[in-house]
Length: 182
Image 1 (spheres, rainbow, N blue to C red):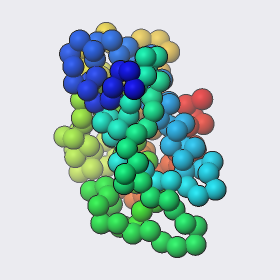
Image 2: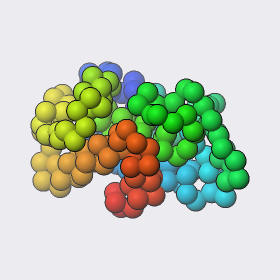
Image 3: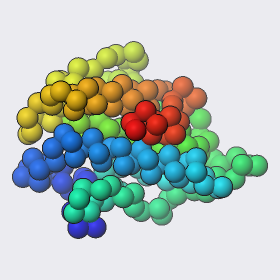
Image 4: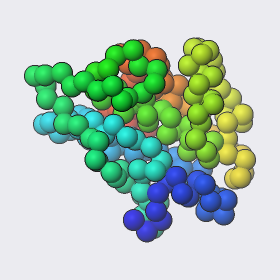
């Protein structure tokens, strides 16, 4: 893909400044729609298991494409899929779409912050119910979001927090997230 990975763009000072709030919002929406398709619109759902900024590629128009399906798992509706490798806050080792939902929540915060939100995610897991102000987590390399972009980003922060719920069953589906972004 022409622009490379989202991770590399966010890590590069000049390229990150080119990622306006509108572009970032559209990237998050694109990933949400792709994950919704993978989880809900296929006869055999796919769990990617490695949703991260390094696996989101961008074309010249900053359209997001999910890559690296090396650890992806096809879910069979008649059996359980187990893995010890997923999401650090999970109490269950079952591989479900909710694993990707958790990673998507981390991705949203990374796109808004402009860097991986590891410390923020850790503090959220130790303080459930905490709220975040958009100003406190926005990437300072670009102008503060205003108007509709501000409203959309505040909605995305709300979605991210719901995706990061410790109980996988409390997390939304990618279909509901994708629909809410439309």
